[in-house]
Image (spheres, one colour):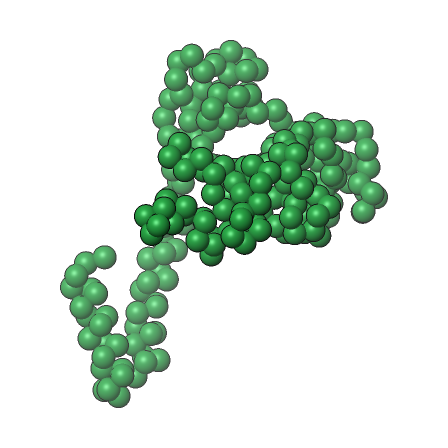
Length: 227
């Protein structure tokens, strides 16, 4: 955006505030050309091809070369022969399996087949009629749970288990969504002596700290300085 354009817009907004200009006419004069410019870009091809994959990363299906692409869930590797070959790998090199029929019918809609797919957070089984039917089957065998062996100190029923979210690994209660307790790092099993929240793993210099942000023991190195 040019400085001249920004200055002109600011001046027009000032004039509207002072009553020297009609906001409706100003908006119409801006939006018409702007909308036309946006629509003119509709036919521009989206940049999803990010270049060749490493030579040692070959297609798991045909053995051919692969290319790095950008999808809605991030980067991945696709066979260069797509759509003739649909071989896929994650950016870490692990093979991504395509959708697979389970042989079951959806218990919700009764019409769609249940399909095992690869999602952002691992494998899952869902109805083929998505988005009309949003049934998702809970199957612990698809993504084995990594439990810390530490009980949730909020509901005292579930265990704190490892989960993967959009910002990385975190630990939360296995009773979710009934209990939504979650912490950033693996719990150590101890309780904070100051607030009784779960203690969690820290860093090399701070091996253990309180999981509650508001607790002074969340940053024990600062406490030591005060002492």
